[in-house]
Amino acid sequence: MNRLFIFMVFCMSLLIAPLSLVAQNNFSKTGYHITAVTWEIDNANRIITMNENVIVKNDIFTISCDNMVIRYSGTDDHKENNDIFSMIETIIATNHVKIKHINGDTATAERAEFHQDENVIILTGNAVLTRAKSVIKSNKITYFLNEDKTLLKGSKKKPVEGTAISE
Image (cartoon, rainbow, N blue to C red; front, side, top):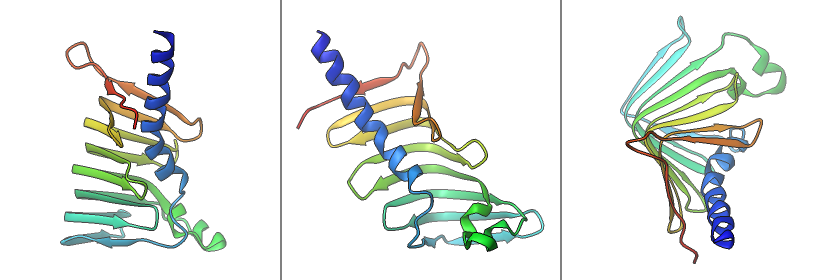
């Protein structure tokens, strides 16, 4: 029983790794390719809204969703270190969100949020992490990047569910 528990914990930690890999990438140094049917850039309010078939790709991962909203700051701090991505405050992806890492790991949800100030990623709405044949399902998955800690929340009616299958 104890060995099975240790194996399950190990497999569950492997499933959490895709969030860590995406987050620790700290916005790819090779750049991004972003497509969407419509873009609205509102400089006055510092918001970029993309709708329909949104795809964000880099050398490490691909994010696809129906809608994405990026809020950014108005400071010029990014000019000093040549990092435009340091301006990003929040990224919110909604509807059919899928994050796929180059190693095949995936995370899906109805909503994914990245908050720069807290350095946290939050997946909600049928959140699912998949690695090979192992799967974790949860109502809400919060990954605290600074702490390398993940909180999975379910409910009495829909508890966190995990299936670990060794290869």
